[in-house]
Length: 196
Image (tube, rainbow, N blue to C red):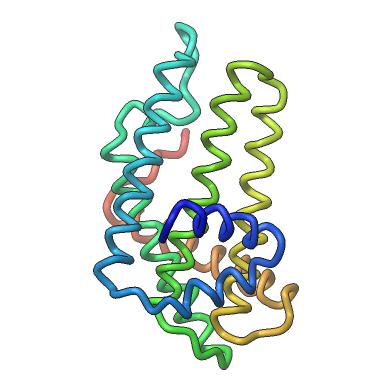
């Protein structure tokens, strides 16, 4: 992919994310390239989080909202795991509802969502330096962008037509995952103790 292709794909992702997703799937890149793209994206994200912590240190006595920002390798590993699980859910849950998407393509689309969020992350650092109030708004925009792209890419991946249904299934899946993870973490003794 050339720089011009990258810029065109970014523009297309904002204008018509379903077409952008279909273009990505049609490239039929080898699985090795998809894994390399994933590792590159989460590595850059970890470095940006670390850079953010160094540029904007937490004042003494305050608890950081993202303590992992000081440990970029741990953060990158967690993001890697989250993206793989997310791609698995995008493919697997979609197929349960009659879709035809493959994990390989879901992984590619999940990586591209991460790339789009990286662009927002860079803008957030820049705006924190020059216009701090706008940086907070970009954080909200990143969440909205993630949800919007996930819904649109899921439609393209599986051939679905209803965005509201996809969003509903996404939230239901997240609730079930949270429920299962809470039991798993409790079993490992990782849940915080409740005050007596």
